[in-house]
Structure formats: C-alpha cells, structure tokens
Amino acid sequence: MSDGLSWYIAIVTTINILAMVWLIWWSAKGTYEQSGDDTGHVWDEDLKENNNPLPRWWLWLFYGTIIFAFIYFALYGGLGKIQGALGWSQEKQWEEEVAEAKEKYGPIFAHYASMDLEALAQDPGGREIGQRLYLNNCAVCHGSDARGARGFPNLADDAWLYGSEPQNVKTSILNGRQGMMPAGLVTGEGVDQVVAYVLSLSGRDSGASEKELARGKAKYAACAGCHGAEGKGNTALGAPDLTDGVWLYGGSPGAIRKSIVEGRNGVMPAFQDTLGEDKVHVVTGYILGLSRK
Picture 1 (cartoon, rainbow, N blue to C red):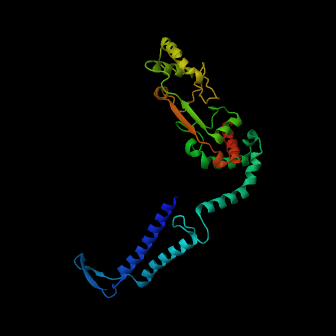
Picture 2: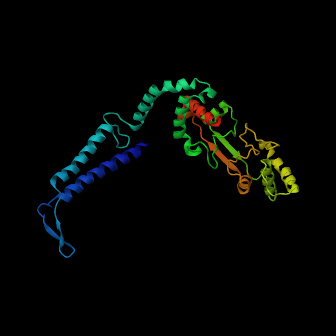
Picture 3: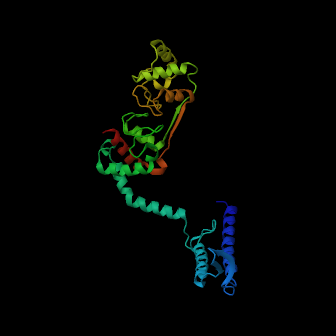
C-alpha cells in the first residue's frame, strides 16, 4: 500500500466517523422538546405518527460504538498503514499461525515424507492425511472423487499424460505442467479425415471408408511428432495416448475436431510454494493409491 493511499484511507475513515458523531448529535438535538408532535402521517383512518425521540440509552449506545472504534484503531491500527499500539497486523498473525502449525504438524508430515511413495500409497494414515490435503487444494479441478472433468484429468485411472512413475506424479504437483496442443496443423477436409483416423485408433467406428481412413492416416503425420506414429502418446511431452479411449476434452467427433482446429491449452498450477515438498509428497501418495486400486 502506498503512503498516499494509506493517508487517504485514514483521513476518509476519520471524517466518516466524526460525521456520524455530528449526525447523531444533530438528529437528537431538541427532539425531547418536540416529543408528541403530530407529523401529519395517518394510516387506516386513525393511526397517527408522532415525533417521539429514541431513548437516551440508545443514543449513548451509538456514541459507545464510535468510542470503541477509536479505541480499536489506537490498539490494532486499521487507518491505512498506521500501526496500532499492540503492533498487530493480519500478516503478522497469519505468520504466527503458520509457524505454530509447522511446529505442531511439521514432524507428522516429515515422517510420511520419509516414506517411499509406493509404500505411502498403501499406508492408511498417510492416505487419510493426503486425502484432506487433496480435498483442500486439488478437488476444485479434479473433483472430490478425483475422477476429473472436461479439461481436468481423471486421477483415479491408469492413464497418465506425464507417466505414472511416482516421481513424475510428484513433479507434476510440485512444479506444475503447461500442456499445449497447437492449432492448424491440419486444415480443410483433412481435419475430418484425421478425426476419423484418430477414432479408429481406439477401435471406434467412425463410419469412414478404408480410403478415407488411409487419407486420414497420411494427414495424421503432422501429429505424429507428439503423439507418435502409432498414436501411443509421449509422456515426456505430456502428449495423450490416442489409442486408450481416454479423452481429456471429450471423445466425440466434434470435440476431437475442435482440438485439432483450435488447439488446446492446459495449465496445472505448481504447489511447491503453496504446500511445500513434504505435503506434496503426502498428496502424491494419496493420488497414487487411487490409481493403484
């Protein structure tokens, strides 16, 4: 926060509180002398509104809240960057709570982080902790059951874009991934021919003739650099296997056609700074356990 913004917040806040003091004083001034005056408002023929003031204790309650506000600002701050007498701040409290949590739970995570990932995937205690971490950090994209959604991989099957080796899965969580399917490698009528051929790779009937499939295979050569000549994918690049029937963005002809024409861009955020390596290790064990069932 800049100094100018800090002073702006402090001045506007103070003026508003003082304005409230004046408004309460002005509204209450003289009302007791005018008590019972008819305002001229009538409902249901004989229900009249009179000018009666608030009880004095109620007015003093308003004044009390204003006094409390100034005491709060003096002790805890809140007027821009002006520190309170107690030196409290949200950031400081957060850091203290994080430090306390690390001291309390750090040894637990360190214990599980020392375990082999395959062993951790079968450990009930480690999986229970890993599930909680997963639900808090990963479920928003991959679902609470880890079965993913359109554009978000299913973590409970055996299809892995970057390989199912434990360290590869951990690396994905630690460092994140940037997936990119380029657009425009195939154009014109070649798009539908490639769609038909790709569908045939997973044993699906596209309705295309052998001649059209042959043309599609020839056009598919533009895709083989990533997906391989046989469509088996490339875990080093994160290129999907086109023969297993698992489709990240949908396996309908229209969805496949859209991937070819428009391309795809997928981002897996890195959790190195958010969770730290020990917690990522535990989450990795939980996810591996889902796919090892």
